[in-house]
Amino acid sequence: MDTSIMITRMQPNQVVSGIFEQAQLIRQYPKIGYRYASKEAEEIRILLYGHYRIAYLIRNKEQIDILGVFHGALDIDRYL
Image (cartoon, rainbow, N blue to C red; front, side, top):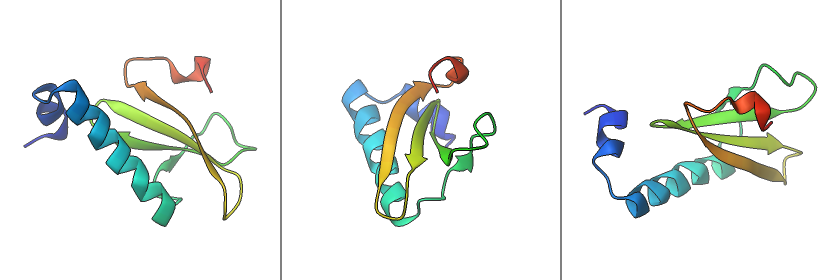
């Protein structure tokens, strides 16, 4: 089943739990997301979960900051 179809059938708390679980992958695999092209000087990456984008900043090997979770329809450039 397509992830986006699955998410539309889920309850809101299930979506939040899914996003949280997806974000946990960042701890083990910091470069799992794709590099955000608009910010070449910073190590900002995006990890996808259905219609949502988890934006995070790799500061160093010990520190990763979650910048936000954005719906795919939003203009993410306004926020990052």
